[in-house]
Image (cartoon, rainbow, N blue to C red; front, side):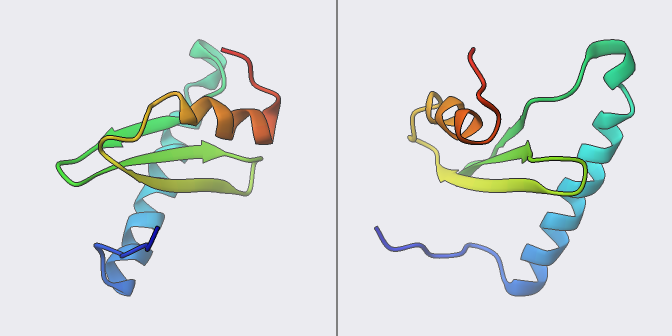
Length: 84
């Protein structure tokens, strides 16, 4: 499957920075609601997932709208031995 970016390189950088800032904001609530496992945003063209790897890194993945949501658990299992 061919991958075509919908964002310019500059918009991609801005998007990653925004995702990082949103994740850090979510992280401030972990003492009250627990550590975040992932976040998802759905747009008209794509779904975007933010998955923390550790305190310094996260995975930002974009999928087509019709991709099965269960695939997120496969990704989480790769990184965290996650079981829903």
